[in-house]
Image (cartoon, rainbow, N blue to C red):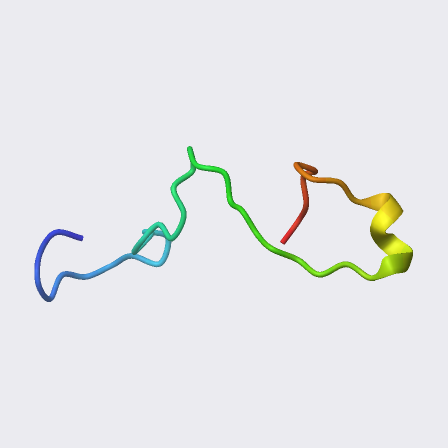
Amino acid sequence: MHTVGGVVTPAQPLMMVVPDDNPLKAEAFVENKDTGFVRAGQEAEI
């Protein structure tokens, strides 16, 4: 969208929150019983 008052189609993205080429970093709390199953740098679904 490049104009004020422009119309957006249902499939047109309005914004990108996180660039595709930058990794997403998150801080998470893990219970003691689960610490053996996670490691730094491991991929996760958020």
